[in-house]
Image (cartoon, rainbow, N blue to C red; front, side, top):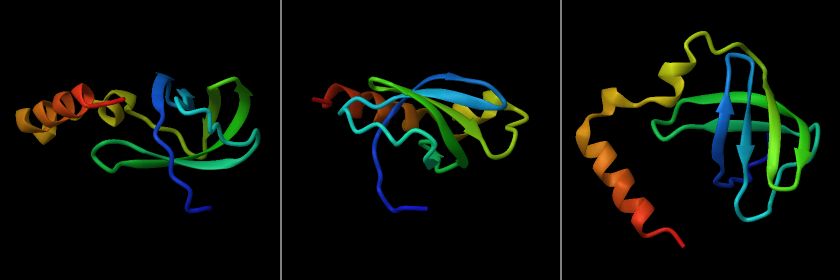
Length: 92
């Protein structure tokens, strides 16, 4: 898998795939392989199945049985959320 990294916003997620939005216009190629990493460094591989502007549909290479745990990071503690809030204040 290529070593290109890009920040994206997770718009929608299910056990089988997700929709992401790439803010800076560098959307992955249609049918390209990608790896999605969350803020706690969890990862899932997938394949882009459609691209429309800045949005991409991704099908995961394996099911995510508990999607809630994949996108929530309560186990990282309150300090983690304060750091994220601070980072968001400084976004361009």
